[in-house]
Image (cartoon, rainbow, N blue to C red; front, side, top):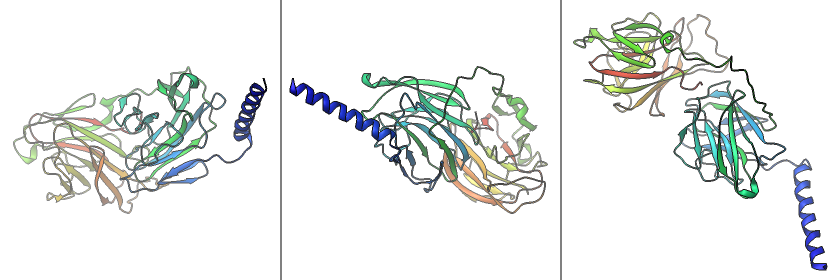
Length: 377
């Protein structure tokens, strides 16, 4: 009987210690690497080659079962991940890549569940979006729990995941220059039933100018003669890049005869029979030779050639508080990517009215799929 009382007393002491540790107000032992933390703001401080990760000091629980991350800046690639990880998770890996971790990734909308290969899950997320993560139940005894994710207060989906002995800790990962978020570890979530604010894509309205290019949803197809350099097919977006939408991507669906495909930025009145990059007020990355053309018909070696299946991207690194007011601005950094990797940058003066996403094609059979909003839902 005495042994039982001693054991019972020890259990009570352990329970009291746990309650004391949680409620005594001492700072939680949060961990982070390659990130700068200023209050509730996290910003990436790496070199875009290595992951930066933040892990909160306390796991989610029944009394605190949800947190949110607001994207302040998507940086170069928007490779921001929000999820749950074990207490001693490796800080050089994105949440979701390693066992006992799960995360929703903003740049591609995929869910990573203990595996570096993600699965399609929800919409992509952009600057100003709120990504939430919580647990529906805390079946720690069973070693499994249901984790759900939200975007701007609406549930995206849920998944059952294994739980480590220490529990699941809120985590944020970043992987490119300029990324910045605000973390709210005390956020609350209530199911919103109003679907009236859901966005509806209207891809046909995305294009302001189309010459010898046929559009079908997000697919652009060259329908010109393709006999001379005067037969360029041009598609120019209706809206210029802005601080809200600063990047777009083109996937090569069919390289056609010669893969004379180019993507870049051009002034609003750019000539319709000129590839982007060839004339003043434009810059472009050309798939057939990997060169960059910047207001000239002669290109410079820049990156690898691109082929069917490759994804080419182009964007502007806007400074903070940038406002387009019709004036000519100092040179800004225009950057290009290939399959999610930064290829390089060029400085370019932004003309009055801004710089418009512009795609050029010039040989039979060329088809591309364009995402003018790859970092938004």
